[in-house]
Amino acid sequence: MSSRRLAVAAVTALALVAAWPAGASTTKSRTVSLAYQGAASVQGVISGTVDSQAGQFGYVELPTSRKERTVAISVTDARGLPVVFQLSQGNRSDNSTMTDIGEWCSSTPGAVRLPHPGQVVVVYVEIGSCGTSVSAPTTGTVKLTVR
Image (cartoon, rainbow, N blue to C red; front, side):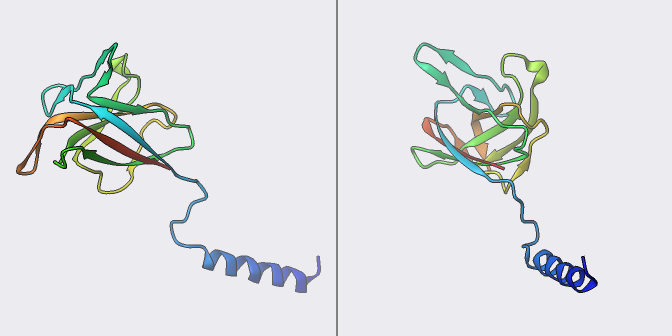
């Protein structure tokens, strides 16, 4: 390759790098909305789930791929009240594999890093308090955006 072509290629590469938005990633995100029913957890006391013939209560779960490193969550209750929730990751059937990531009111402040990419994300909908409001979830939607 001639020195002129090499110089043009270098300038082009530098222009592309400068034009690439800061923090931009080639990883695509996906957003999933899952319905929840009731609460099986009490804030600060117990994080649990209830499974019956009628379905699951108090949680939603979403499998992740090994490439997905973060999750942003928002929870909306049908009554419009704030909802406290706990985010965990791992196997619900084996408490020793579960990692508690954090607890928020209605939504995470942004994307939260997943400690175990490729493992199931579990959102426990809880009875408790969101600031000065009461969290007494009935039914609603958990929206998860993983990237």
